[in-house]
Image (cartoon, rainbow, N blue to C red):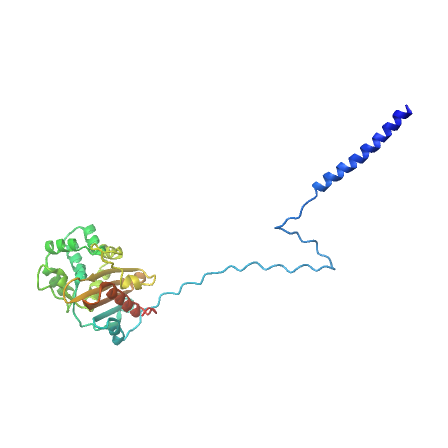
Length: 296
């Protein structure tokens, strides 16, 4: 019994030692590890001052876009320099004031190109023509539709009748009855047409002008002038360009701003050596100058 008791005691001692070793090993594995991302600051004591709080990062607020400038009065000589060897006429009419801000070379006459489509549209709708096709003619500056309406709704008498009705003193029907684009116009007369459209609330025609596509039906880019220079203002336009003859005509006309406040008409004539992209940029620069932007 003594021998067995001694062995038994030795076993108990060895078992106790083993238990201590095993317990120590598990305690080490379960010890909490430091967290790399989030640190918990110790409680503040009088001996250890609390660290200063880290300021929250500033949220950058994007600068507000400057409001478009109002149209300004421009000297005729300044506009002449922008067309150099061509001609320019311009009128900017403020409907709130009921007066023109700019009127440059207002007495000059030009071939209308597609601006006469405004009168064609008036005659067509007055006589019950198709509204959707009229709007398409205006928005895409569609020559085929214009020719069809010109023939069906009065030809040259469209021009003479509306010139008399609206007091368009510088507007003349074309010498060749079949060439509606050869109608003669002046910038003040085009302003009168827009004033009539806006005063009479001719919504169908104005919708066609607001829906102007970037490319005309012939593929010509018609966002030169007013659209390119608008600077975020709402606009509606009827553009004009002619392809043949000793000179090129390039015109931008329409309304600009909230409630169509401004009527803008710029008529230009360029020698054929000036290509259309160059002439288009010149017209846009002219409108920018009239609108008081720094692109001029």
